[in-house]
Image 1 (tube, rainbow, N blue to C red):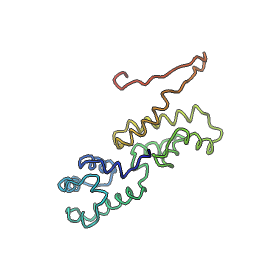
Image 2: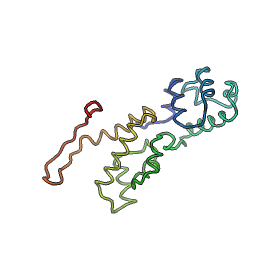
Image 3: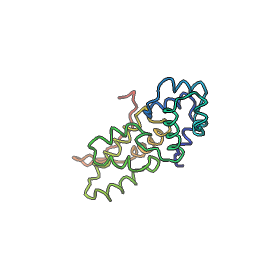
Image 4: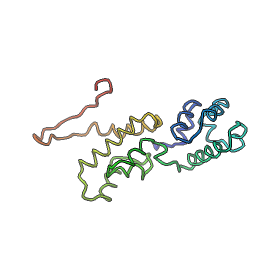
Length: 187
């Protein structure tokens, strides 16, 4: 089942919504968040807000315009991956050759197979080990980013989870090496 951002936002309570808005780096201040909190604006109502509602909340014009733009981007599916998954800004500015995939396609279209096909069509001489390493490194980086919505991290975790059943062969002795997932506590 494809993941849908408006459906995720609709599940947020007021505090989770405010946390999401803080992570968007919208230049809202505590007074703006207090207005949303005092009106008990949660995810479902947030997506339905109009200018008059925000004026009634006693928000200033700057935050009103900012929030209306964000609401429109969410409702129309135009919110960029970089805004939705903050760690992608770091990845975008890195020198990782194959990272462009992650801000070219919406996160709910990502898959290892799609990534592999995209790599081979754009970088035909790529080595499988290099692009696989990049894919799983970025997936894990996103998965561990606390600023990314929990539902998106869960979706991303499934992409990473598919790798745990793969078999790898030791390059020197050609024996099969199985990797098991190690929890944070075991590290």
